[in-house]
Image (cartoon, rainbow, N blue to C red; front, side, top):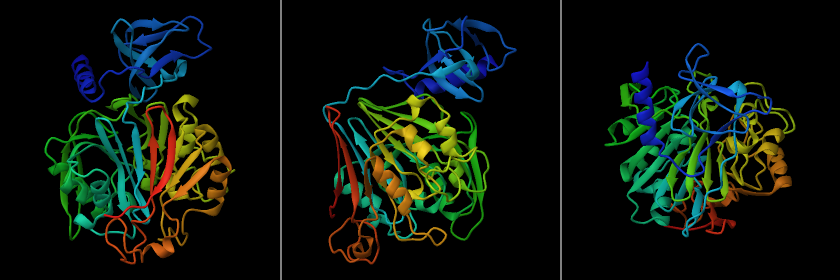
Length: 424
């Protein structure tokens, strides 16, 4: 047991280097005498020490029912979640270059490209209706336009294995070296997910992280005409609550990760918060609050939005929200939005209907508009297909390529948002 724990700690130290302002774990208010720190995540294990009321420890990992922490003297152990909570994180200092968040207009789907000093990150790249490939792939074309000469993407996050979030990713692997892949590990037996995993498996030196384990290999078997057989990918450090350092003044916290089998892959959505200097951006993927109901309806028990609301308030708060599920009534419940407190809302959607419904839903857009400013890639989709100068193929009768959204975080923390109507 000690050897396996040591190995896990070693892996975590590579993937999650120490950083200023790391997440703290502290006793809840009702603790009067201290919280025991145990050797293993069980009440039967040896007590190594305690965290006194008002004291703090550094979060290393989150496991069911427990936090793995580091005490000020360097010792590591586990504390019960019943008696502890996660404290607020210190704000990061933004580098002189600032940060940029690009929501790429991929038609009906999602692709978010983030860049800052020392790192690049891509969260999803898929579409239902805008599937040009190779150099015409709109994600590849857009990144090449805004970052000509870029050769490497440091972090690629797949929120969940649905076509409108992953279909454009194989071309990204062909064009760029990928250093880290973050994927819940939930399996969807589609040809698109099979092709994605084949690219990950073939990427030299890639570090693959999922929500299942820090050891062994991730394996998935497929049958189909274009992609079949078993894919095997060696695992690096497991996804945990510990922040991931991205670059100067930037880190990523994975707020929700779940690899359990669900009937709908949306329930496995990886939800990410990016801390970019003093600003926070929440990437909600297709995280839902329940069925198609009014925004005022409380999130359903067990839904991702309900799970997120249950976290300490400091974890969920953000300045910018990339809106869940393309602005569908299944997401963005008012209780969730109240917790996030964002003022800038970015929606990526298009004309392809989800169960006969074209997103975003008007009631969701109205609710977001009452809270701040709403930006949507679906703006003027009716005319986008005929535009003769846009990202990717021009005048191709496809909705994508016209209304990319660009959010800029300045070195002073100033936030600005605009449509990035560019052509390649």
